[in-house]
Length: 442
Image (cartoon, rainbow, N blue to C red; front, side, top):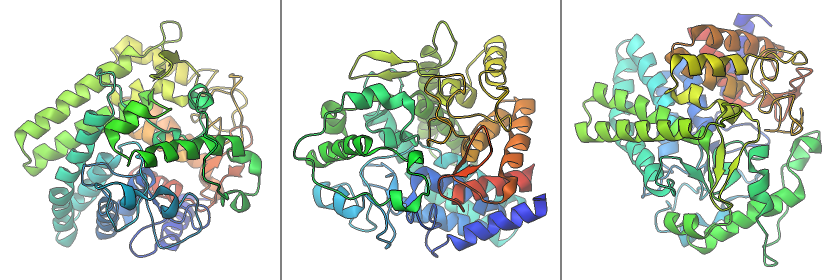
């Protein structure tokens, strides 16, 4: 499919998934607004319609909790998803959760400052109403996104080092990554886990692409633990069965703090808050670098409950390329690993774009969600951060190869890394969105 047809198809996907108040992640499997999906969707919408992108940000922020957390799901009125509002019961048990819209009780990676950056830049490239709308959104969103970053710095740094922790694998965005296997294995669902019926398996053709029932029991038990302590963030961190310092999320936190600080300077926001963002960024950037494996050089997660490093070879190992901080030699060495035969340069890959797990790893499962497939949205994120960090050649290569992967026009959630077959849900909004951004901005 040529560039013009691909751009038209991507725009059609976003229009088709638009309910008027939110662009749902996918019409069948994901009929609501997911936090980090929404941010990437805004990136694509900004290329089409600044006002529509701004409204998407406003819809997401309407679900922000009073304490600053942006929840991982803002629910629409659709019922075809589990766990839904009745399972979370956030507004019932937590004083910080909004009564409307209904939301989940956990978070996702803080990439929203990147979306705001893209919307503001798109508005400023244009004139009149678009520019005014973008500046208005900056004024509205900035203090709310600052509160979100502050919530993470306040409640999700249990070691006091700047390493941001997740209390559920879903918070990472990489739900069933092998990064979480050992931490999940230690979660023992109680006999009083309320019964449930999954709704995802009848919407994906191959059940082998989805998590198992045993995995789902653990996912839901963690939610149950949180619900029973009223989703109080200090209690969740203190008592929950799952607590892992997430190096990928930490890198995105540092990156977003820097981006938000730059936007704050441009928008005349308080100097002390801008300085605080830069302090958080520096602290978390250093924390990311401190996780590197002395043998492989790749970044690692840290299982706080078990008191041990998690060295599973996943895409998260390249987190320093997102947030920066490596010296030139270290950066070149990490890029060489990413582009080498265990990763992008693996001879069996259909395109040279990052898989979520190395094909050389025993954990590699080419059809299984975050255990091997190639995700266009992750490729876009690395490409964008690399361009920002001056790694232009690698960024351009990832862009070109991923566009080749998605040229079938299915806009799949993720792709089989050895065959290029579309996997997961099709007509996925964030895939369409990042394709649009690449095609518009090159």
